[in-house]
Length: 231
Image 1 (tube, rainbow, N blue to C red):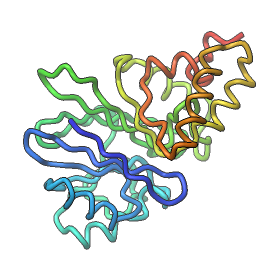
Image 2 (cartoon, helix red, strand yellow; image 1 turned 90 degrees about the horizontal axis):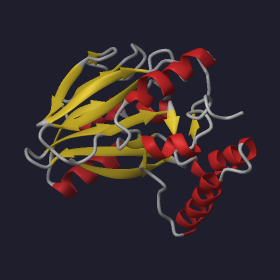
Image 3 (cartoon, rainbow, N blue to C red; image 1 turned 60 degrees about the vertical axis):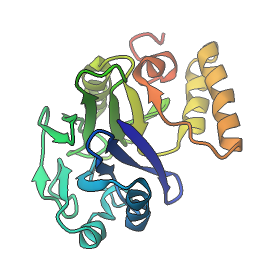
């Protein structure tokens, strides 16, 4: 599988997920539809699917326009508030993007209908990917707009945290530096956090994304994934 990062708005990320075997593609949270159309043309792929993590405008706000620009798209989401929704999903629903397997993970808290999308390829040695929207960020997690701390704990530790450790994490925003500054405050003696923060600042200075992370990495520097370890 190939994942193309498409920066959007101020600090958002859209993701073009491409099955290289069939040239079929899905787009995650296409808030800027024209950028999506341009990327689809650039890669010469067939866009068939929209994966919406949640209904907030900076993630789902481009759905209506995109389906007008590219009719026939299947729009997945876990919330009736998702624009242009054609297929409502819930926990462990599965479908395919070309030969890629997509599993829906229900992670309510940031919004009550938030879905993460876990993507694998059969008979492949490449690591899986998970698109986490505003549930899990690099070194952080989303605000509890419609949920509780217990729900976020379940989403991070019991759902996402049980995925394979090599799973690549593609989140909805470039919040890494500020998240790591908070992590440093929580664990001032954690050298992994200090090194990751220096790395993230260098990436930012070079105009490069800090995405993706991996779940294994998150357990070393994300305070919300480390709540069982932090004293």
